[in-house]
Amino acid sequence: MLQKRIVTLKPLARFYDLRWSCVFDAWRLRVQIQRQRVVSLGMDTDGLPLSSCVVMPDGSAAEIKRVNLPEGGNQKIAWEAIKPLFKDGAMGKPGAPPYRRCIELESAITQVASRLLCAPERRTERAREAITGLASRGVLGCNDGWLWTAK
Image (cartoon, rainbow, N blue to C red; front, top):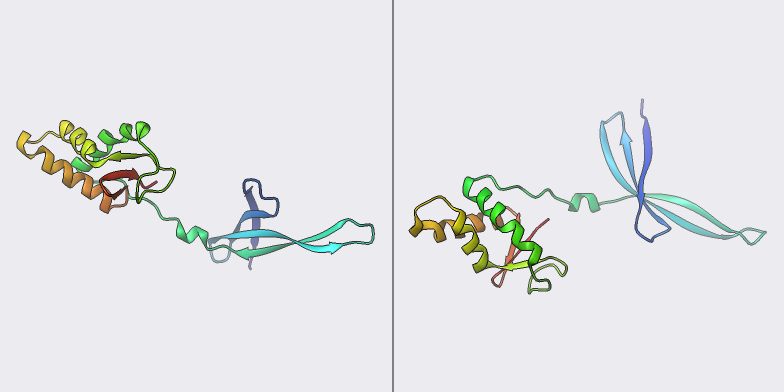
């Protein structure tokens, strides 16, 4: 037996004719994200607009990927050390998304190195490794000496 249920999640901001819906297929136990669009069919005899709703599959949910959180001890310390710096960061740096706050890489390394619990001569090296690990896991973005959060 095939049962489908369509639930409208929310209208998109300021778009009258575009809605997201979630279709739950009970037989296959899966959820599909679909887009509902209002299609204008013309005018009726009284001059009122006629419209219909079209449901189309939406592939934008496949583009969303989960950001991995830091796993190693130094990465966790580094993440907790540089998170507050982003509140006062600058926007519009090269290579960064336009509305993401960015901080300088060197100031981040200095902040992380001050919190690490290793030998003082190794702190800068370990801080660089921790920030590089965060960038390779997708937690941070990096370009031209600037860091930004990926989420």
